[in-house]
Image (cartoon, rainbow, N blue to C red; front, side, top):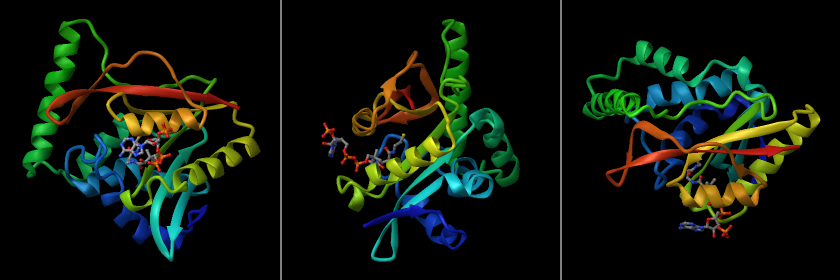
Length: 212
Ligand SMILES: CC(C)(COP(=O)(O)OP(=O)(O)OC[C@H]1O[C@@H](n2cnc3c(N)ncnc32)[C@H](O)[C@@H]1OP(=O)(O)O)[C@@H](O)C(=O)NCCC(=O)NCCS
């Protein structure tokens, strides 16, 4: 198992890994249309910040990746990326996409009525960087995830970034344990994530931070 920086020649394999690396996690599938999901959660990181992207490789096969962003404030926001992806791919022929965005609208309205907030991004200069990490099931528990995270931490130290945040789900116990072991601590509220369900139940955003 090797962890290393992303190379442009990894694109095709990484795109294929994106489709399967989240298997079993509560975020395994969002609205169920891979091209538009990749346009939000993978392509902008490959295009805009390849030096913050790391991969785990086993016998020539990519089995994990970490997409990072050194300065979240200078990166297009998640809502804007989703809107752009929906404009471009129009995935609304898919039942799953229609159900997801229908539920999402319903959840946001319901939260407004109850005067509650829903999931959102963190923009705090104490933790300007953020990351996403996914390791395919065959490479979990092997240290690949920690290897990816350590490469990312090295980059943050080199760039003198004061801190990093990430956003996962309260319901993703395995991920939260892993992040705690890597030095992250929970931060702030745990609002509902609109549209998303795991085993039929609502899920909640967990923001975690780590200072350097
Ligand atoms: C989150 C992820 C990167 C962690 O990497 P990993 O290789 O699984 O991490 P570890 O093997 O170090 O395991 C993390 C913790 O989960 C525990 N764990 C192991 N197998 C588990 C299982 N089947 N179910 C729940 N917890 C499990 C480990 O014992 C460890 O806990 P500990 O610190 O108390 O020992 C990886 O599981 C993954 O990519 N999952 C799918 C996608 C995902 O959830 N990404 C994060 C979205 S924010």
